[in-house]
Length: 179
Image 1 (tube, rainbow, N blue to C red):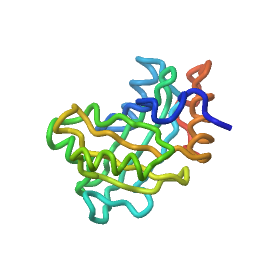
Image 2 (cartoon, rainbow, N blue to C red; image 1 turned 135 degrees about the vertical axis):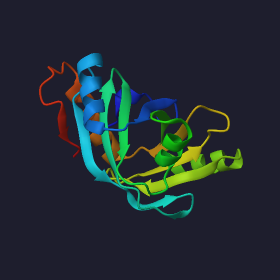
Image 3 (cartoon, rainbow, N blue to C red; image 1 turned 45 degrees about the horizontal axis):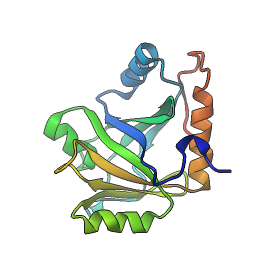
């Protein structure tokens, strides 16, 4: 089953992500002030075999995802001071917008296209949906990074469930388990 809400992968931005100081407070603000929810939370995330700028990473983060209409919103809180793409942004300009997520069914090709364009791979990891993510450092030309998100059946299942939960959300259970 294809996730129709995204159109075709490679069509553009499917996600906007923000680094936040306190994920519980951020979820509460998005839910109460913007009516975005419910949020699907991973309390501790580092990814599988994570690499930060080519070196093993031990950044410990919380991730929360929801949808605002058809746009996936991700909130990220880093708990520790380990070097990371999130810590870079916080140290450089504080909390707020971090990256756009682009869905791709041709992960290796797209990573190589960004590298050929002069963009460094800032972060790589395998993720709970069975896919991979690659953060390409586009900050020299854009106000954030680009995250390439591998679209596969696990991604479509998880994100489809997140999206369906937001339709007609009544404000109850604003925080739910990720998977």
